[in-house]
Length: 280
Image (tube, rainbow, N blue to C red):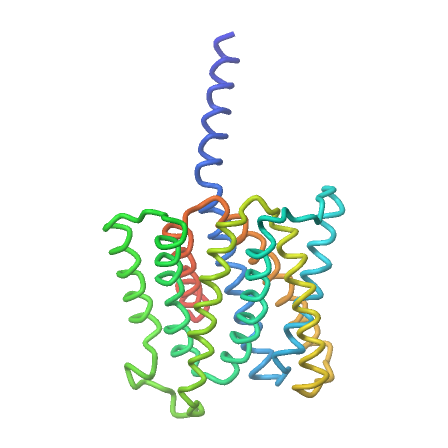
């Protein structure tokens, strides 16, 4: 009897701990998969010249497939409550335009400069959360976010600040960094909308974002950019990018539904440290 009670107490403690840290864990997983996706995007667009719109369309297609499987398997309704229609619409717009801007900006910018600007998004997220959602943030948390950003800049060492651009690297127009800033705002907006409509299932969010991504990708490939014929290797890279970005999106959505913006968004800085490990 005592042994059974002890076992039940341990199970309850483990269950409580998991519930408490589930959001943080999912956001860490999201950072890992988004980093993998970023590497693929850079290789696909820069080394192989796949247009941003075409890449967005393919990534959306994989997201549509994976989210549809989850929705079908779990019997999740696609209906979204009327009170969340405007929020989800804004989330869709931010997600698709942000992905396009990030894809295009990465292909045209020095990566270190791009990331230094893009990682302003936790600051923007925290400010939006405090103003719109009235989410509180302590001075210690604010200082930690600021310190994290300074650390990221020192690690990335953007060439515009440190003048350390590789001699073999092409000089890029700094105006392309506006895509990084726009991407930062869209990520912050996406995070805010996720918190507002946190009752909407993460797979449903991914499903609608993926549909819009496919549509935008098709329009871009038809009227804006030329279509690139894919080799087997390029197709495999796009498959990896679509898979990792979908996992990253779903785990990020669920993680932000569980955690406040002041805690959840700075976890994205982990992508920089994963980059250091990768480069090492």
